[in-house]
Length: 266
Image (cartoon, rainbow, N blue to C red; front, side, top):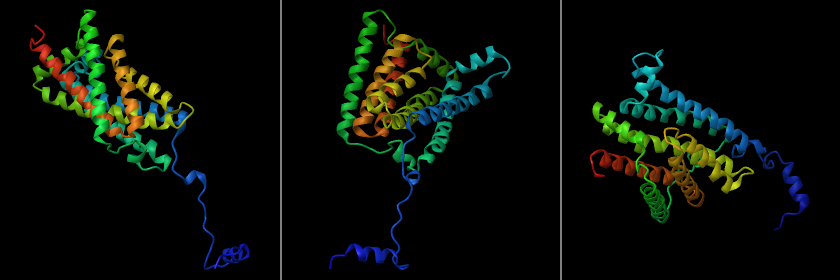
C-alpha cells in the first residue's frame, strides 16, 4: 500500500517513529579550502622546521655559535637526523589540521594505493624528466649531481652514516614532503577556486621552494618533477604513489652521487 502525504505527516508525529534528522552542513566531511589550507600549511611547515632544528641544536658544539650551527647542519649525520625528525612533526601538525575537516586522516591525504598501471606510467615519466635534465646538464657543462649532495655524502662517509643518509633521503624526506605537498596542500587547494590545475602548480611551487639547498637550475628540475607528481596525484587519487616515486627518484640520485664520488664519471 502506498503511503499518502497525510499518512507521512501522521507518522512524523508518532513518538515511536520520529522523522530522520539531517545533520547540519558543518558536521559533514569537508576540505579546508584555499585560505585555511594556506594557513595550516604555514603551521605544518614551521612544525617541520622546528623538528628538523632539534637535531642541529643537539649535535652542534654550541647553540649560540652560528658557525658551529652551520658546520653541524652541513654534516651528513646531522642532516640525516634532521630530515628524519621532521617527519613526526609533519605528521602531528597535519593530524591537527585534518581533524577539523571531520574526514578520516588517510582519506583526506589520499593515502590509498592505486593500480600498477599508474606506477609504471609514473616511473616512465619520471625517467624521461630526469634523463632529459641530465642530458641538458652535460650539454651545458653543468654538474649532473648538485654539489650539495656531494658534500653531504663526503661527511656521511666520514661519520660512517651513509646508511642513515639513504633512509633519511629515500624514506623520511619523501614521506614528509609528499604528505605536505601532494597530500595536504593539493587536497585543500584542488577543492578551492584553483581547481586541480592550479593546485598542481601551486603545490609544486611550494615543494620546489622547500629545496633551498639547490640553485635555480635544479629548481627547474624539482618543479618539473613536482608537476608530474601532482598530475599523477590527480589522476590516481593516491599520495602513496607519489611517495613511492619520490623515494625511487631520491634513491637514484643518491646512487648516482655515490657513483660520481667514486670516480665513475672519469
